[in-house]
Length: 200
Length: 168
Image: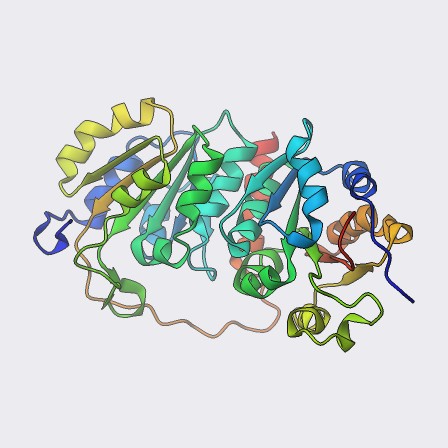
């Protein structure tokens, strides 16, 4: 059984830097804490975000991957987020998109709500779960340099691939601001330009 | 009026004529004869999901990538998918058409008169979510399938089709 209490952990910033250096024309679906940081590191018209439907990033990415088999799709998921729709591991493995990379940021907490612990925080291992579900490749990293050395080989092989990145939780939370009446939701603003870019 | 069973091949033809490319599904006992045909179909792809919440997000992703999906679920799955219906289909303004089987419905009664809460609460829930719905109570109602796709495109949002009796 995995013991997460003693595992090495990198910073979220260092983890995302490794990915940002490989960013080309992939569609990237971000969510939770990593989403804002990713959009700053890698602004792109093919960025999508799962905001307001926690747990949906992996299957939103799956749909894009199945519709665009010649384009790589990356999902930058959270551990608490994936826990909410854990069945998506089986759904993704069954659909078997070779072009899908599923990153799971494993900080062990619900960081957006104030860093409360995940259920089974000390043991949960998403790479083992994905392997059991039938992903083509899985890997885990707690050190950014090791991740940087290994990622190109993982990207070169057929997916679906799940990479679990152990990161240090930050001591923060996000409070929601009231939404003025008549506001167009973020997702409705975000996806039509992505669809247009993919169609072009 | 008594609801009439819809032959599976007729429902499949209506789905095909609506231009559906992918059926994103969680199996429905009520529509199993259609599912059997769909899974053997060489033109329409079936994508099997673990939960109906996932099916909403997969459908949205397919639309982003230029495909024309349809969701096929059971009424119990409608209740299970509410968060993504709200957060993805409604907030994201995705034209997703849902084919929902009313498993166990008494064909002699309106759904709102049914003894089963899963049947009885379907349309009230859809109304609460501001999702239009159309009841398929026999082969004569199959015109709603293609029309639902037009309606979903026009309103930039989901539309539900309720399969009133077990398909044959």
